[in-house]
Image (cartoon, rainbow, N blue to C red; front, side, top):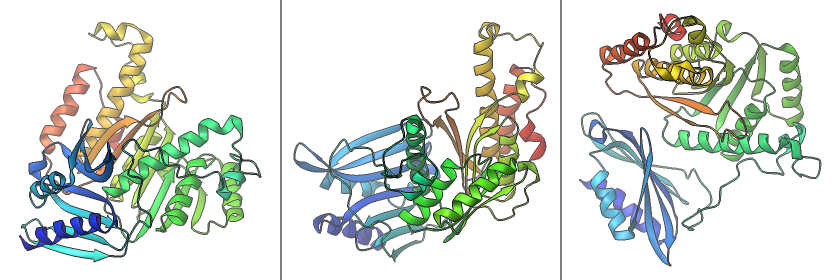
Length: 385
């Protein structure tokens, strides 16, 4: 089709003109099966330019490298039949190939999203998104006045950069409005909330409004004062319980380390608001563990307390993920940061999708887990409509 020919021609022209940045394929069609996204970048291997494809499946990533001609051929085989959206990022413009549900294609051209070409090194150094010179890091006490990392905050600084890396990756495969409303539930001292606002607003130039929801008023007052000091006009904090929060407009819902069922309250708010992206790092999985206390479990693994605790953490988060899938979210569970820094290192992500869902099949999976572990109910089941 002409649209595919035009898109491929733009890819080759961008590579030849040294304007090429990357390509993302998103919104998978049924033919993609367990493939969620594909990211394509230009790398140099043994002095030869290659197109490196990262195929992101539900459970793992796979990478294949092609010479440029072979990469263009591989891309051609994917366009139009595997993904509804393909975006070429160049220094001059972004070019988007869109496919409708009925198969109609269109090519859109927009202003460039990224201003610099990435390194062509095959093994790239990690890009820091929170930089030592960022003023908010000094205000929050992560860097000193000279921009040097305060030793006791090293783990927090690493966590911030990992968090921003994850969010950056998620945004590439999520459709969000031009003005993005973000709610961070259980924002605590606000380290990650400030970092997210600064990165999206000041580094990526996005139109964002971020609200932190935190029950402890002293932390809310402190964070609001720091936000004013940093000049972060669209960052604010509210003292309120998560389950009482009434925010109809949420594009991105974040709940990092909201304790026990507060994570479920946050997820429910995100589902109710039809949020495009839900990001959680659950902790304190007490609800199911307390519910099954005293019940004899068949598995010998459950004989040992530490294994029982970890098993019910996995059970709790798996049911959360299944409930999100039932509500038309594509879900992932992965390690947020190495457990040498924190035990609270699992992240659950839900991305809104318009895929057809077999709700009865999902219910069957949830019920089989509950039956296997003698669970009466999961709290999230009771609060989602």
